Image (cartoon, rainbow, N blue to C red; front, side, top):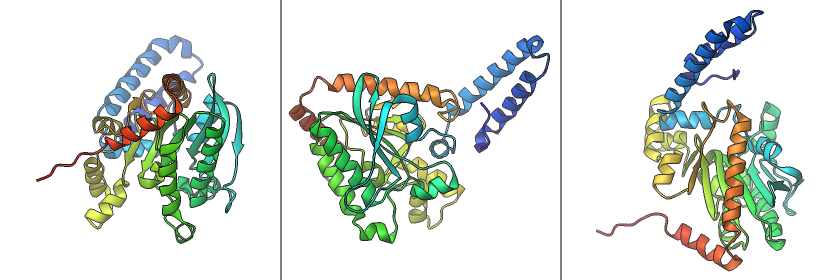
Length: 320
């Protein structure tokens, strides 16, 4: 699959893609099938090698790929009968968080997720995936609705962080996120969260307190973005400091699994979700359905107690 945006480390693959497309477009393409198969095999081998040794900073770049599936894309691919629910009944409707009811497999569920937008106009309307307080309040109100009707909650995390602007702070950004953390820990219905792209700081945690938390293979999840960390530690965010910061933050799926911060890593297609969104959606749907089936056996009280213990176990302290 060719894309209009090329990651620096993917340039050799793009050249092979061009050769494959040019050969496949020829009138005598059928007679060139052996050469085509050889080129595709070389392309796949190269992708496997490149994506098998990505640095943490390269992983961040993949998570930000403009063709990577977003919440709205996954909803279209894995949800049936989806009906979006709008507004927080306090201020307005924040387009950077999508909420709605739909079916995933045999499960009726509430779906909540960050949305970044595709076009420039959409991205501005969605604040580039950075939610305002009304977005988190909207999410919580819909979660309370799901709890009332006994519906499981599925959240898709994809944000560099909550919106840091003056108006968001005036409307209670920190309070809205803190309230979500508290209330999500108490909701008496199954909650599962998946970091599908970026999982930045409190912006991610605002919809990320769940019974099971997973990450897509090339997503990142951390207390701060590499650029933010670099700007604080080295007073400058550039290629060198961003690379060092990304490594120090241990933000990849493997790192988060190792530290017990997430429960599962969901595999992506060869070359990342941006190369085959449909296959990525199938992998995601399979994990969601399997996890919801597993959580079905717990009663409401047990869910809340286990959720509390799960987050209570995170982190360690050594006394001198």
